[in-house]
Length: 372
View 1: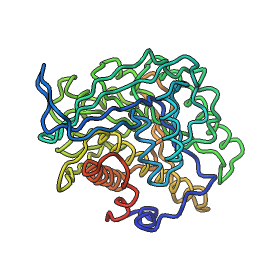
View 2 (view 1 turned 60 degrees about the horizontal axis):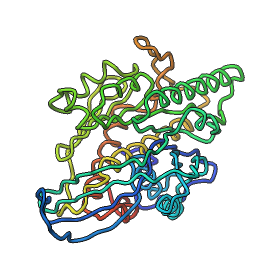
View 3 (view 1 turned 90 degrees about the horizontal axis):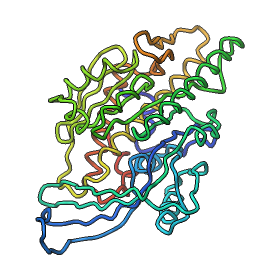
């Protein structure tokens, strides 16, 4: 059965209320220089590209672009600079109504740059990245945020030691919110514990250190294969051993679709929905992540509203306590059951399929309204 909020957003989504909490994405914003080629170039060859463009990129920043088109208030947190190309990135975020007010600005910093080669013959995208000695977000930057403004915070798996500290900072905030509610016994709390999600994309085994603090995790195909996992099912089974009790885990494998592990251990699956013609695969994974974040965050807020206004307490809070890893925080996934997870992963696969049939991200806001 389609959830109530999902029925409302299909084709008739009203603009979000100004007081709606934001989704925060922490990570990288960079300049993508994109070249569309008939075939991937051979080494030491000279050939023309079919098309050329430059655009704002970076996993966290791309996910904000998608969520903003869906109507979700969102914010990006990453280090920016006063360099010319970084100014372009900032102007583009303004265009898409992405908040970046809390981003530290480096006076003499460079702008991370990626050269992206898109092959029309295979649909592949090859990325060559230069970080320009870009500084990463630190805990001191993160502590300047008012966490009461956010319902969900998503991290790229990057500067691991600092991200761990940020996750622990959120846990401390969540504990204070929970304690406040228990002491006042208020039915409708103004503040909501924050759900933490993380993306494990790069082939870095130390990224597993982030899992004990994440309520929701996205495991890339590249990361899974670097661990020796042969398919999505094997990925979910093995990664769950390192995750927080009750965490939701996603594994997407391009044309094979995606699978997800629910908090109760149930596994759901969805096939890929390829477009009639593949145009642009750059940012496909970021689109999938954004669609999931958008969908689950809406479910979370709807669940909280229903629970808080239910005088008979017929809706039970069943957040699972973590028992087997260093994090002691309960998992903020009480709103995710098998049905919700199936709807979310289907929405994610459909939106991702639509995205790779487009150049860039423009147009997703109109396409998603036609689903279901």
